[in-house]
Length: 248
Image (cartoon, rainbow, N blue to C red):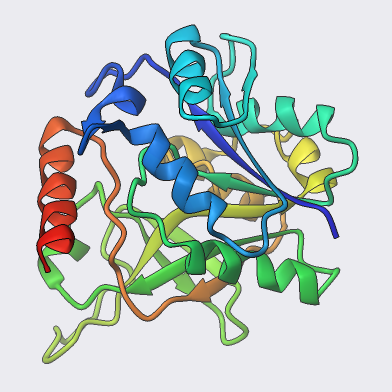
């Protein structure tokens, strides 16, 4: 089974322009993501998809594979699909966020597993326990609730579930990882689906699959160690984590 990891990366960002090229220990952030993705045992190939020559040049300098895409894509998933169209031999495509420099190869492999084991599953993703109530109320942290078979029921920026009688001890919340594995045919179809009212309200693209009646298998990981970089402050957090690992 041919499985390809694609890292969509764009230079323009409202909160953090040039984010993929931000320096982390003498290497651009996109290099950290690429190298960690390459450690995933399930991926036969890892590709960076970008519309910016500055990012492409940085990837070529560290020996990575890069594909230039259209500058007109509204989302990273559309950029992903453009590359997937060219990779006709790929059966499973993994969308690896370019702003996750601490992404675990183990998580990538875990997200791929349901699609390898069950041909009826079109799409999968990951989640991790998030016991802290303060993070549950953070709209930048996406929460997910599932049915008893581990299929996503809903994703939200709100604290779901919202315990009616409050919480004592660890909370019930699950944080969603922005990592997806798709069957190639489903990915190409997904980008043609209309945007529904829930996706518009929450600004969460994965709700499109649920609104159109498709299931997303969620894989639960034991920890919540990945840190997404949305702002320069997030980058400082990652720097501190990397420095602590080097000094441990």
